[in-house]
Length: 382
Image 1 (cartoon, rainbow, N blue to C red):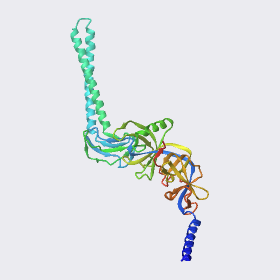
Image 2 (tube, rainbow, N blue to C red; image 1 turned 180 degrees about the horizontal axis):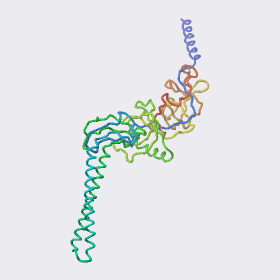
Image 3 (tube, one colour; image 1 turned 90 degrees about the horizontal axis):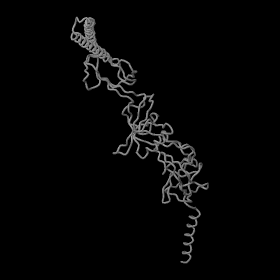
Image 4 (cartoon, helix red, strand yellow; image 1 turned 180 degrees about the vertical axis):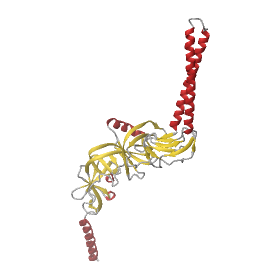
């Protein structure tokens, strides 16, 4: 019985010794290199595209449409003839007004000649002063009538101009609402077509009011770039410049509107299109950058697991400078070239043995930006 007991004890000691000889458990993790690179800081707001100019083209005269000189979707230049309204009725009115002024001018000339005759007779006393004064009044009345005729002629000429509807600016024609032969009126509420300027084009987006002082300060120093991304924030559509900040803040949302202008030469932006506007606030040169996934937060603040040469890890406190999408700039605590753990930290503690996931070099670099090139929201550390 004693021998059996000793034998059992010896076996238990052997298992414990083997466990101790095996050492601590090795944890498989993903790692990345800390790099030194420029760190762009973006502010992101939801916006909508707005045509730089929009014109609802309506008729200013009544008449029949004789010709439509555009195709739907066509780009027209400023001054191009779009629609011709029958000018013949207004041409007839102009001729009537010209005949009327010719008649009134003849009457005015006769009245002035009589006034000159009456004036020469005053010294001899052959004519009463009252008759001369009456003749002066008649001349003035006829002169006023001629001026009225001239104003009516100018108005008739203006109506003829209105018969030729031209493009007020260079832009793209939308779907037309009328065809040749239709009768249009100046009082019509619906436009005959809508003309929008797409080059350049504007984007109106919003930012929280707390960010406005920073944006305003940077606007004084340089022109800020704005990048427009698709609704899913994956595709970059265009790059433009910030033009202005609205003069008031929306009390209901605590945000302010900002306007950016884009050349839009490739027509990637369309009016009323929803976009994500990424305002490039600044670029921090030679920043110490690591993946945001490497950051952990504990009672002592923000820290990372630093990989040492012997493939053990050490908890290292760091100070965050700015978080930008998948990358974060560090103000202190790490140096370029250090290796940090980006996945599997939940199983680690200081001194833990690690093994690189997928081999010793996989994941050992920090991407400069996501594959889509999409920036995230820049949040400077307080």
